[in-house]
Each structure stands twice: as C-alpha cells, then as structure tokens.
Amino acid sequence: MFDKVGSGASRSALGAAPIVTAVFLSGGCGSTKEAHPEEAFQVETPFSRSIAGNGEAVCWSVKRVFLSQGYILERSDALILTGTKVYQKDDETSILVRLQTTCVDNKNGSSTVFASASREVSKLQRVKQSVMAGVSIATVTVPAGSALEMHMIRRETIQDPDFYAGFYRLVRQISDMDRIEVKDARVPN
Image (cartoon, rainbow, N blue to C red):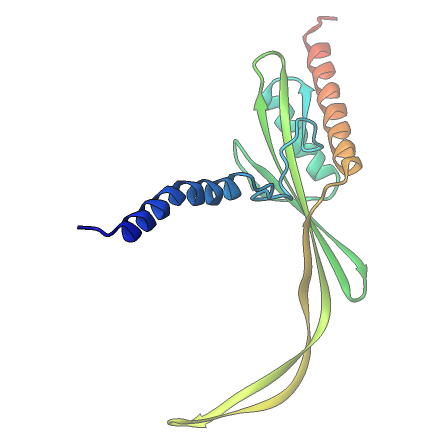
C-alpha cells in the first residue's frame, strides 16, 4: 500500500529521531552552567567555630559579646540570637550591621557557634513629594516640594574573615573566663 519512496522516507525519519533526541539531551546534560554560581558550599568558611563549653554556657557568652560591643538584641530565644548595631558614617550615611547567631551543643564538651552578618548602607536622599486633591471623580496631583529621607542603597552579607575571627575570639575569651570562674567557685578554700 505504501509506495517505495514514501516508506523509505518515513523509515529514515524514524531512524534519525533517536539521533536527534540523543543530541538534544546530551546538550542539556553537558552544560557547565551552575544553578547558583555565587553559592559554592565549602568546608572551611568564616561562619562557624567550635568553642569549648556546653551549649548553654557558650550561648550565654555570645549574648555577652553582643551586649559588650553595643549591639541591641532584636530577638533572643533558645535557638537564634540576633543583634543590630548602627554606625553614623557621616551626616548623610548610616550603616546597620545585623549579626545573627545560633549555638549547637556538640555533646563532647564543646559547642559550635554559627554566625552570619549583613550590612545595610542607607543614605539621606531628597525625595519629591506631592499632594492629591480632588472632588468626587476628579483628582489632581500637585507637586508639594521635597523632603530628605533615609533610603537603603546597598545590602550585603559580610564575608570578611577578620570580622568573624574577632567575634569568635571574644566569645572564646568570655567562655574561657566563665569556665575558670565556675571552676574556681567549686574549689573549697
């Protein structure tokens, strides 16, 4: 029922389909693009440190570091401790540092403290203002001058290892002092 030309053409088209499919699929699998190239998980990062002491004592040390460095505690619960500190760089620029931490008791006499900080830079900017006036369905917007307002111009995660090293160094010092004080309190005179 099929003529020889028609059946040969349909057989060659069917024979090429697996080749075309293989080429198409291999193009997708061979891609070297990463889904999130800025997020490369690494073993060594500045965002965690092991500190000698149980979880409760080490977390108490973290809270004392926040308060001793002028951070305002935003949220304090059993798992997460968040503090903020605002710097006035100049008359027009304000910098807010938000440091969020959590402590995990390792059940071996040490705890791991995880910390991540972000910096928000805000700048005083002149913003045009307007007033809307109208009656019924007729509304008119009229310029009403301008005002100075703080606007966030940049937000970033702090990546500087020295920032975190200083934080962990102070947590370790306070934790060590607390352990020595507890040990000395137990020794009878």
